[in-house]
Length: 218
Image (tube, rainbow, N blue to C red):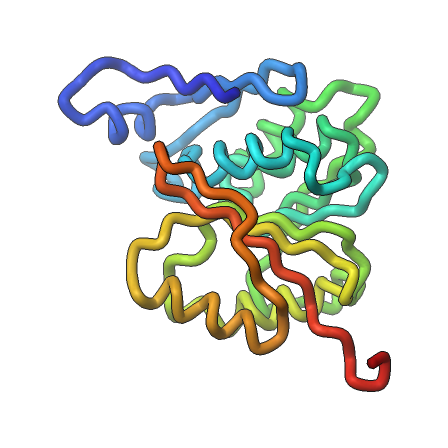
């Protein structure tokens, strides 16, 4: 279970986002993450979707030990860090402004003997995908990355490039608007999508997507 401390106030949810750090306990490790709302905004704080996805990973329903995983839109890196602590070889990605914060959080929370299993890398969806081997990841992770409609086509291209028909794509999100459901419909054009977990308290859904087999393989 995650421990998310914050000051008591009339707006506790906003209060915790503005704190300089957030602390959790996952995979038998204390995880303390730096946050920087003032400099990086939404990309540099821990959102509920990341916490719920980490809780789901701890359930063990997705095999991580020795698997190749990649996190998209990582922000603080919580999900990728927890995946690594659970035994995955992880590439943790986000856009360039988040790189320094991500590297700091990985350095601070991954034990020295596991540092080699984690790489922080810049990835803007839909751009420079040739730097990432097509279809080579066992697990793709994304927490609260479905919210800006203009990014949906690039995100879909990225998911299609990174995944094979054996890749598990795990997306955790809160359904806020009709456009969020529209993204899932777009995803279903190339992937089989099912809801595998729902956290009622936080109103977060976890979806698993598997890429359709190519016609020549059927």
